[in-house]
Length: 143
Image (spheres, rainbow, N blue to C red):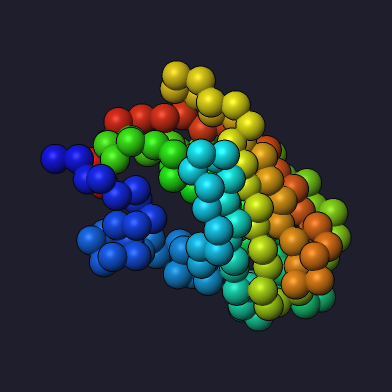
């Protein structure tokens, strides 16, 4: 039976468990506009995410971007739908340091089953540290 709440509302209300990846990345929802297909999320980059020179390792930044862009789309879907990422292209622009990082994601174009997404990850000072584009496929599932 379909719920009248979106995925994020169901997680916040305790009806669904919080995804373990979100916990690992320190994910928090900051702003969501399902009509515009935009999202703003926060991440807490742990010192455990750093490389030998003390910067957040690129794989963690890519995961944060994937966990920004995907939710921008998932928040617009019906209850029985999900959208796994098919392709993720990341551009690293400057080093990121442990602490708060802010992801901004948007649905660029949504077709019947395929959606194109874009976004960026900013440091606490508002500087863009990485950008990404992604393609996702809308599938039927039960969450």
